[in-house]
Figure 1 (tube, one colour):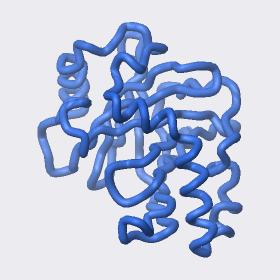
Figure 2 (cartoon, rainbow, N blue to C red; figure 1 turned 90 degrees about the horizontal axis):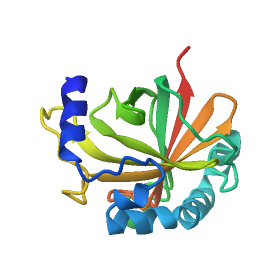
Figure 3 (tube, rainbow, N blue to C red; figure 1 turned 60 degrees about the horizontal axis):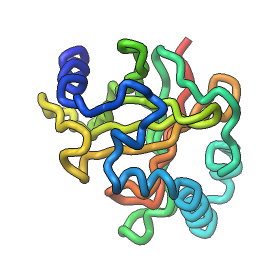
Figure 4 (cartoon, rainbow, N blue to C red; figure 1 turned 30 degrees about the vertical axis):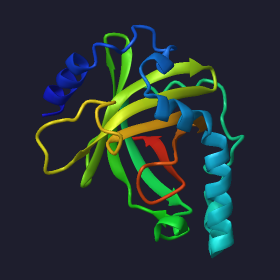
Length: 197
């Protein structure tokens, strides 16, 4: 199933540049703007969670939600990962200031010299490509797929499905993906990734 999805995504994304550093050529205008504003989104989301009474959780998971946490070598190595998503500052959309979901499994694979990311478990998956941006940041562009679906909506076709994040290494064997201004629920979503050894 995952192989079929991967091949489908690759064939449906003929406009993707061969150079991973040129992520802007692949991103929709809306996602490029969201990604350019990731720092502001993380600052607002973090402050919203703190004001909502979750300062202890923010501090406990430091530096996950720190704007300046990115370290050198953002490249996400191929392999299996434990991943968890936290939604910050969902009050404006009727949600909670801080929601953290249980861990799930993700996979990063090398496909023709490019990195492909797949959330493997859970009711909602995200599937797409990771582009190198600079030494401290990569960019992920993908699409939402529900667990009951057998077909993938290609990135850029439906804004409700499009996912965009910056990718940072924030410690030894610890990465994050920051999704600024997602379509649903929160100001920012932060995915924490640690390799399964």
